[in-house]
Length: 97
Image (cartoon, rainbow, N blue to C red):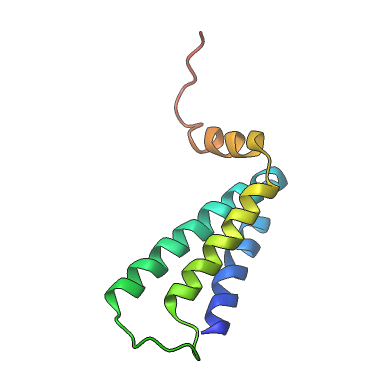
C-alpha cells in the first residue's frame, strides 16, 4: 500500500513538471492530489475492510493525499492558481470591460 501511495504521489508531480510551466506546477499538483484523495475516499467507502491499526488503509492514503495537496497549495502563490485557471479557459475569447 505504501508503494501505491508513493507511485500515485510521484506520478502527478513528474507529469506536472514535464508538461506545465514552472509557475503552474504547484496548483496543478495540488488539484491532482485532491482528486486522488477524493477517489481514495470513494474507494474506502465502497470497500469495507476490517479496521486494523497494523495496516495502512485507503483512509490513510486519502489523508496523505489531502495533506500533501494542502502543502502544495500553501507553497504556491494565489496568482499562480489564477494563472492556472485562466490558462485552462484560454480557448474562450476574453471579454474586455
